[in-house]
Image 1: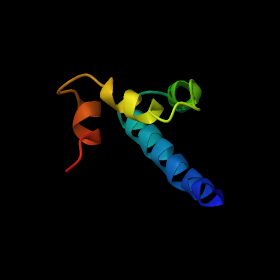
Image 2: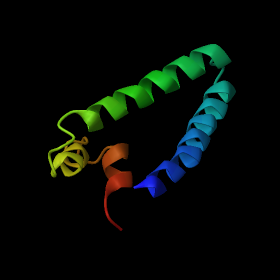
Image 3: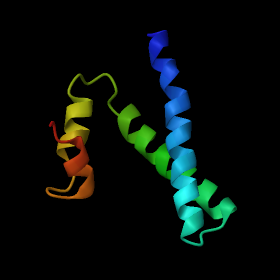
Image 4: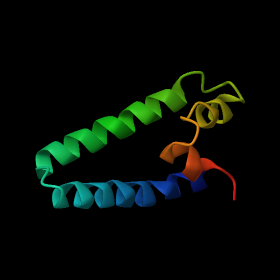
Length: 77
């Protein structure tokens, strides 16, 4: 299970890339950090809800908007 903690670095790098993109759109560093942090917190809270349900992650994937960007990138190749 400790192997999963190795995903912290990539997650932080994705957040950093999100911030860099928001900065190019004129969003301040402080607002970017706050928005990204709160968005990721919300996602983590969704995952933690009913976390003992073995179907939870499948349910979260299935509830994405059909044809939307989230659904498109989570679809198996």
